[in-house]
Image (cartoon, rainbow, N blue to C red; front, side, top):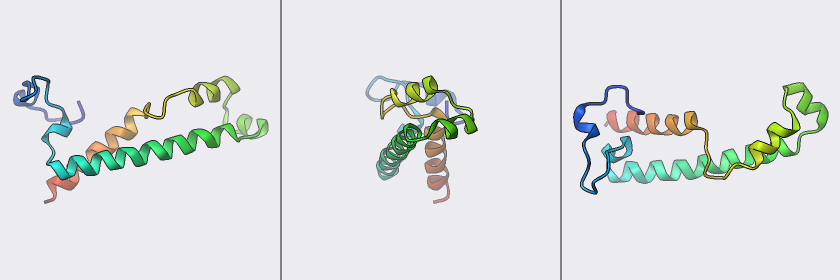
Length: 100
């Protein structure tokens, strides 16, 4: 769970019958901002993956990447984002809401 101090109430099903997620506790416009930030992150990750494909063999060796690792990364979906980076988006939005 993204929030360290989750309460028992947080694990109860919400109105739709599914478990509440950290995003469910955010106000509507905060969820919209989070969705837009997620789209922006997806674009950045996609560009990073494409940049990997343009590295020369020498550059790949310099940073310790093998061809199969780059191929595996390029085969990932645009929606397959690193969890740590998505979690950072959630934490930032929760901090932003807590400051208000």
